[in-house]
Amino acid sequence: MTFAARPIDPLPKVWDPDTRIGDMLKGKRGLVVGVANEHSIAFGCAAKLRAFGAELALTYLNEKAHKYVQPLAEQIQASLLMPLDVEKPGETAAVFDRIKAEWGHLDFLIHSIAYAPREDLHGRVIDCSEAGFAQAMRVSCYSFIEMARLAEPLMRPGGAMLTMSYYGADKVVSNYNVMGPVKAALEATTRYLAAELGEAGVRVYAVSPGPLKTRAASGIAAFDELVADAVARSPAGRLVDIAEVGRTVAFLVGGGASGMTGDTIYVDAGLHNMA
Image 1 (cartoon, rainbow, N blue to C red):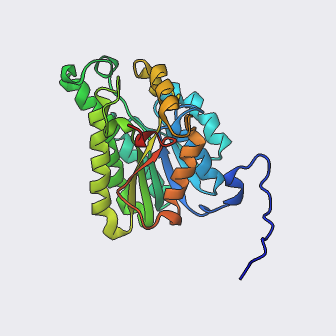
Image 2: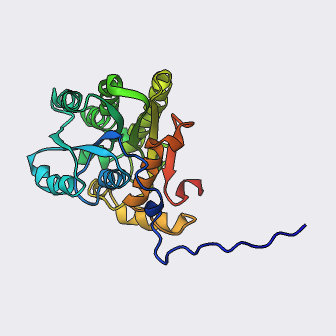
């Protein structure tokens, strides 16, 4: 038996996957924490989530950051824009109190913040100060636990919580130093939160992008060498961009990922598979 070949509609010369997805997140409301400027991973996520129909709340670190984040919030028509420094007592709770008052519920949470003091980040792990390690864990890991606890009563079945990790959590990466153990703790936290929130129908993920030229990444010593190595070793021979991370986040937030939870999802052009 033979079958006649059917013509396939050609793709546009410049194809954007988003044009075929539409409003898959229409009606969903979510909080994105960590937008610093237009190059930040958090903004790449926020922009794609909004493009797919989600209604968003954003946070900014302090008044210095506000002037950079406010235009971005306006650009993507964010409904709420709030200050959030996780090291300031009460600010995290205030964010979720406002979401409860104005929205009543939350469909997803995107946690994209990390910090380590420069002297600890640039030194050996064995030389890391106790205070520096504690601060890195507080900002980069414990804040996700705190936000998850505050978000839990606002989330309905089908909700999702995501945080941002990096390959240095699983393998030793030169100059990543103290952030390696911190991100490893974050990925373990993701698995435990997924186990604890699964009965409520809430999924939890860590997303692990490849190296991206963000302001936060610029604090890593010899970052340009890290980028060059990623391009040379990744199967795709390139870096990913924040839009690609955003599309992955949108998939995880949406119903298409309903059978997944507790996973670390790599978005690094295949770099993590290479020896």
